[in-house]
Image 1 (cartoon, rainbow over the protein chains, first blue to last red):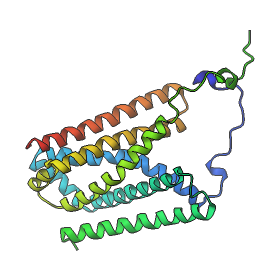
Image 2: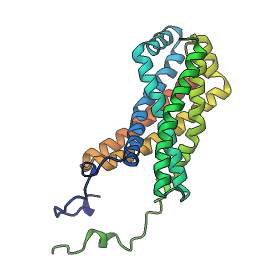
Image 3: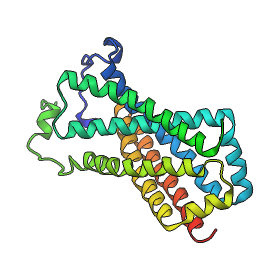
Image 4: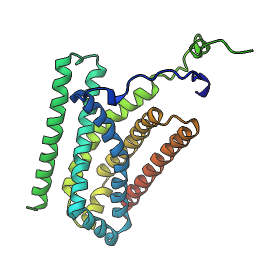
Length: 135
Length: 127
């Protein structure tokens, strides 16, 4: 599209740093950031699947890494990122139907999805730790 | 002779490329599919957390789990590629760098997807 670009040095529209941070804006940014994080996080899923296919020795090694403190922190972050991006997607589906554009509704959905993503992440980990019998 | 026409004027009347909604629609379809598939992944990981290799391999190689996992990998890879494409188009402005990033995005998502598929198929065929 190089041809369509104007050679004139036109002023740019104001960007992020101009605006006061607001919840809805932060949620939009976080939706993109979590999407990008999940993009690279998919390597963890690939690693896990490949480890399972590679055989017991390598799988135990990867399983051991996942069980370390750093491994658990990464997986906890992965869980929240996944759930938050998923709920952000659900908000987009609601908007796609043409509904939910009233300011109070937008504000409510932003808060609700943030609370829900944190709550669901906590529940998933509580169930997970309970199932594995870890304290 | 200097071209006095504006960029907008050059494209006006040419008609659309007839694929305007394609990217949007694919992103929604894969996103919708990713909801149940992601829930499946979360439940799977909880069930398999801390389990030994034979249990994990048997579970991941079972027909339902393998098919759901393959669906997640395919739907996820397409969703990832489309999403990252928009991010690249928004932030990478140099024409050459943009094309290289977009191609890398395609190669990365396809390779990631193929690696996952290979692992799932290997597990399904009895390892």
